[in-house]
Length: 545
Image 1: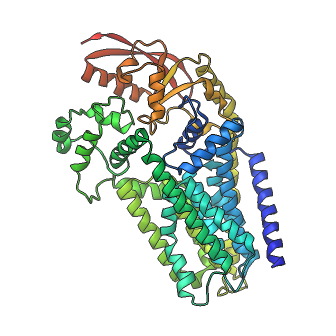
Image 2: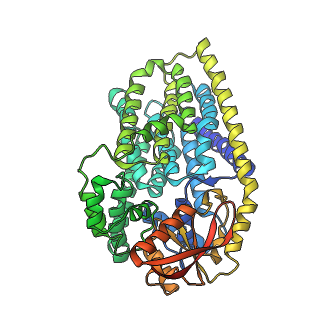
Image 3: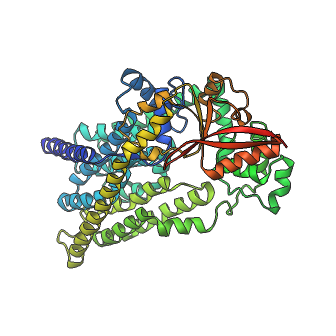
């Protein structure tokens, strides 16, 4: 037991040193704008006039924790730190799992190489969905490694508990998806190997984790049930989610009759695809349901058939995972059956996610990265040979080479983003020069992905934003409209000296055509300010047509 405690402590120290070195030598950034929205809403800046705990894609417990932590110390980057901590817990747990295996030295080396080859991508470009699965898989492997033949002390069980709980409150959907994706491996380890069974500490940790998760889920449901405005938004979000996430919406002759019946033009479809739902009468739940009901319940034509193949074949991160799997497979040839089943199962999930839900890559890539991590875990099983063959030695050298090349490229990209930070800050600073203004921002127009994830984001405290994205129809957005005394933002943008629009040229054209088609007004954009990342416009009315 003492040896196990020393091993856990050593791995804690070693992995913590590695993370601190990485954080100090490179900057972490966010992969998508959702994490930036999480910070702005819980801090009560930018998008929000006051702090909210309502980050509907996360558990309400996490939103509440963030809100109170930002109220206590607003300059500390709590959300970025939590994502990095989750990645660190997942790394620590996975290394601890390898420590209790038959070949810890080889497995630790393979992990170190694949860490630079694969995992650094998820750590340097943080995303709450990927972080959720990252910490989940670490807890899972530690749970699998902790059995009666090699029991750990209570520290292992506590680590498993926090890994699972962190995964759930960050992204409940990803935790549930993770539980589904790992089923073949869990069945293989615990049900097909009759000698395997969990010690009491792991059973207690697992039971406690799932009871706590159930309590968090119940609290989340009850919270939103007690808040009618957020409950109404959930209905709206469910309606648009069915179309934006699950359907390939296209204006063509086949759908023209349907769009005519709800008074949608081709331009309205373009507005919808670009998250502009400002016209509440046109972009209503009733119209969304009419479009949804026109599709078959089960339809495999929801996606452009080229996109899935294109994503698999062209994404550089996926290529690295394939290379890692190819090299690592040489160490687990005796486990080919379970690996084949698990790989097929994960790709089956991918097909369902992509064709049925238009899954973005940051949902599938963590699932794909689970395969090489499983290979590393199985490479140290008792059934593998202790001596390396010539082919395996060549694979070790190849993995090291791939890792160094990729990490070098990662460092260059990271350095480029760090060099851009002062310029991005100066562009945002110009928006905050006059605080009592509203900027209507189209989806993904601001360079959120170029902001340091460990920054304080205080520059947004003097910038009022109404974003055309997930929070557009939430109480957060409604409060902002009331503050600026706006009844219909689609038309009130025009001729208001305190309202500006940040958009690209195509989005500006969609808005101008919308005013012409539905309000018979000709509006003209005036570029007030621009930079390499975005342009700011004011719109004036040239008169009715």
